[in-house]
Image (cartoon, rainbow, N blue to C red; front, side, top):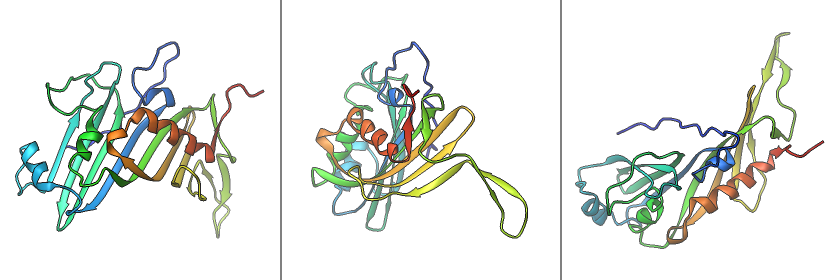
Length: 222
């Protein structure tokens, strides 16, 4: 299986972004589906992809068909006993066009959904952002110093893991780290995905709002 490499979307002044992730400084959006084999039409999936029933692991990359879409998608899957695990990871930038008739990054979610026996499915969603320090800050003081128990040694804590209260986004956990040039914020959400209506362009703004539970924009502040 091909391993996925972290892709960083770089914001450049004066350059209009050509993908859904860049305007929000989003590095990654990942969708994990873990379902019973009865929920997913594995036989038809094998037939349409050219895989065999002996293939228990697979990995591929979907590229954008439209130049302005600009993002690509890593698709990984596995079968273990009676459970199927499927992951779609959306990254910024795409330079290779898919073959005619093949799934693309724009249609990856709808294509995957065509093998499910229901139009909607629960997913664990992880979204990571790299926000510029000039425009974003943590809602609590970072970094901060603490003294280690049993000694006088001080350490600097520049990041923290958060259990989030009930919220309309379905966000369960958050992570935030402050670096010299950027504030990294990530969120884990419980979401129901409607495959035929899915658009990553509509999803990312929601995840961006979710991180505002523990990070805030400072642009325009005095």
